[in-house]
Image (cartoon, rainbow, N blue to C red; front, top):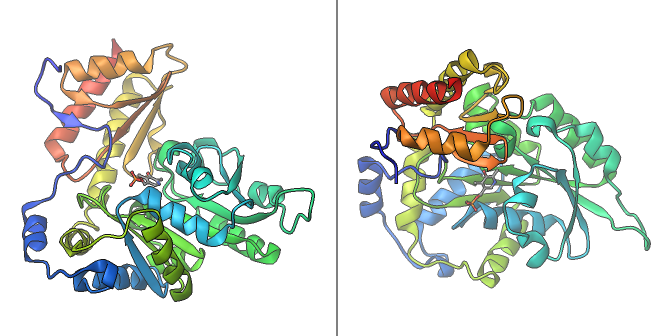
Length: 349
Ligand SMILES: *Cc1c(COP(=O)(O)O)cnc(C)c1O
């Protein structure tokens, strides 16, 4: 139990609670049975997100993991290979779902701080590998990169990957759980990111602040197949317009404010760098995730997290020497400043 009241919960941007306006939108949502395709609010959300990303159709899913599993499975048949980076959410945090449920195999390429290396991925790809080696049929990219520390993938790298992958006949899946953050940080249009990928998953339940929900977008033909797979995986949902309304509200009212989260994350990184420069370079904090590397300091991540908790600030110990702090909708200027003070104090002692 923390000995102080909670000042800031920075363990994740999934911890946000629905805002009053969002709750009103949910209460007022028109609903129907979505397995029958009759929920107007879900249908409208799916089309809206598809339009934003410049794709034909969308599919609402309860989680980002499922949107990724369906998106990848549309591009990779059982026994074929997905390439991605070693820190990717699809290989580290989806509990082996792609292998266990989709029958796909994976290989990974290193990515310092999650920054994708298009040439390394393309050089590793083995398209049409014949009867002896497994064939690569898709590459997954994560933007922004979660375990990399909210890293934005440079759009030139994404273009290079797309061009190279197309030349090899390999598809691209974008894990865009936090694509909204990349868009707000760079100003690159969502449709430009969309055009560089065959399937895209986006989360509504991270910094955008909806309680649940993700959307997968792609061609109408692929999304029709994904609708069948979603039901097979047990995630055909009924009157979920009540949840889709929260997602739509988030997109309409809580998207551009992600810039505030980015400013808060930067100020937290600056406060820490002042007392412990080896832990973080504020210039590396591009969006809403601050990763602190405690290797040089010799401090244990669990000890730092416990000490911060004593002062009411919750952060995650994601590795023996890695602490993660994530800013979000439920963190105002005052709480962000308080969290920065606490983390600086804990790391200076
Ligand atoms: C959160 C996240 C997901 C999806 O997570 P769920 O908890 O299944 O909704 C996918 N990719 C990345 C990069 C994420 O951060």
